Amino acid sequence: MIDTIVLTISKEKFRTLDNTQGLYPSWGLQSRTFNYDKYVKNRKNDPRFPRLTFYKRKDDRTPYIKVEFSAGKILFNDNLNEPEEKQAPLLIETLKERLLEMGEVITKSDLENGDVQAFHPSKNIPLSDGYTANGIRNELSKININKKFDLTGMIFKNDGRSLQIHTESHSIVFYDKIADLNQKKKKAVDKDQTPKQFSLFEEIKKNQPKLEVLRMEIRLSKKQKMNSIMQKLGFQKNPKFKDIFKKDVCQKVVKWYWDNIIKGENLFLFGLLNNPKRLFNDILRKNENPKLKESIYLVGLDVLCKDGGGIRELRDISEKYIKQRNWYRYSDDIKLLNNIESKNTLHSWVKQIDDAVKDFKPIKESDVIP
Image (tube, rainbow, N blue to C red; front, side, top):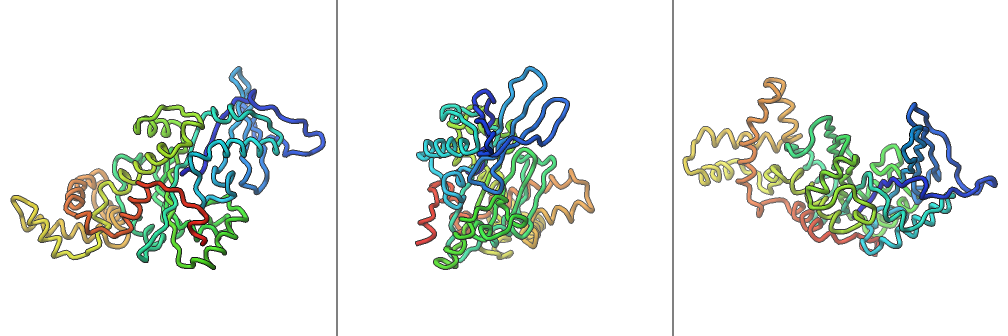
């Protein structure tokens, strides 16, 4: 349902315990600017604990602590298991206890009302019909990112382990969750692996060696973008922790990105049939005034969009010979191809993701290890 959460809470809500006996991690100065001093307090290499950052300002503004954590790792020591809304009280209680172990005392109410700066709604999707997470990731890498995504500074990265459509303010990430459980930090998409995740990988490979799980993660990394998406989906901006740890919120965010950014005008790329003559006939049949030359061009465009690196590779090649703005003249033609493709002829992995997002049923360890 949700992975990373970043809260900011006024420093006055915390009481730091005396650490003269060295019982807790200590605050360490990380950096200093004209505006503030930045201190950190972490349990090194232990993702079961939150990461704390204290900004001590040099003006009259209230100092605050940033609390960053993975809900799954706080609750389960891994993020293959997905938290549920009903576990919110347990998450708050466990987070409070972990903070106490770090020498910071805070009430459950203050945690529940912490200001959300960023959060990452996500979904682990078990696959069937012989599809693999890497195969689907490669198919998704062919898509064209439409204008609903902020293209400024966007990185479209398909590095063999993950597909990342990334800007500073928000990102969409797809990767093979099972394979990632066994990756070292430098290669893993999830950089905060826990020992339990390595053991989970061994258990899964022993009991269900063919299991494939695709992870889709939406990273709302900047508050302005988070607020924009929340309001777009009918929620209040500037949410508190208690406002975002909800199935309805996480599901709607994931669904919006899947429907609008990924599927959007790209469904024709995922067609099960790859028959140019069939497409040629469909174009002619669905056009009231069919023109052979234009229909042949559309068939060629379809073939080029589906080949190799997909639309993005086609665009990269084309923009060597045309001005960048001229590429958008082809967008109407791509929309036409998308409208012609029947949803009944799509690869079944599309429906599998559709169903997983629609149901939003949490995946548990018991679901993948009998």
